[in-house]
Amino acid sequence: MTSTAPNENIKDNLKDQISCKLVSEIIRERIQAKGARFHANDNISDFIQPGELETLEREVATRVRDLLKTLLIDVDNDHNTQETAERVSRMYLNEVFKGRYHPQPKVTNFPNDRNLDEIYTLGPITVRSACSHHFVPILGDCWIGIKPGEKVIGISKFARVADWVFSRPHIQEEAVMILADEIERLCEPKGLAILVKAQHYCMKWRGVKEPETSMINSIVRGDFRHDASLKQEFFELVKQQSNFGKNY
Ligand SMILES: Nc1nc2c(ncn2[C@@H]2O[C@H](COP(=O)(O)OP(=O)(O)OP(=O)(O)O)[C@@H](O)[C@H]2O)c(=O)[nH]1
Image (tube, rainbow, N blue to C red; front, side):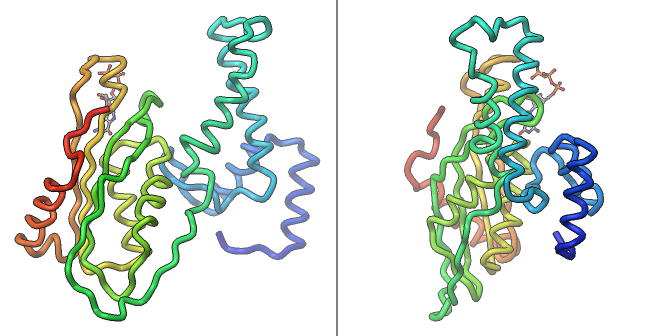
């Protein structure tokens, strides 16, 4: 987000407070004023100012309480659901969908001093998401292959970035593309390959109720795309890595 002069920010905040807008309206207007997208799998943290997430948490809890009431659950007397609205709100904003509302975890990159140009793979990295259609879990494993460029990042950062990207409502195909974009941005590899195997609870828990079906998809970029033997090496290494085939 481009910065605005401090006085303009203060004026805008005052205007918002005087008009008694909901914090979700204030944030939405800020996003729309910049012409930015706010689909379910977009990160909108640049548009949330300090303190607003806590206010949003209270607003979401009110809406979840309304949903529970509309579902004819006696939230006032049922001891099990009395604080469910607050828990669900916290869970969405700070846990399962934190990748929408919180900024990217800090990732330091280092120079590839010795010009390492061998590929390496990393996995399985557990990924947890939810499908955009039903908001029920997607759980799976991810493997990442890198042919380094001029920068390298610590291997734990791949897991942190994957967790941040997947912690949004998604479809699996887009989740993998967004993760690829973020990794390319962070370490500019000469080649990048990603494979995800996941189970979708919208198919497992409800709907067709298929308990074993999983979805596997992959993306290859740079040298992995142009060099068939490198691509094959990635898939061979992934096969050898432990837990390939694990079910949730
Ligand atoms: N391509 C793709 N589809 C997904 C993903 N996650 C869930 N889906 C599917 O999205 C579809 C949503 O379709 P709809 O027909 O509108 O929803 P529905 O009537 O609840 O469908 P059923 O699940 O068949 O009961 C379902 O077929 C899901 O299985 C994903 O990551 N990628």
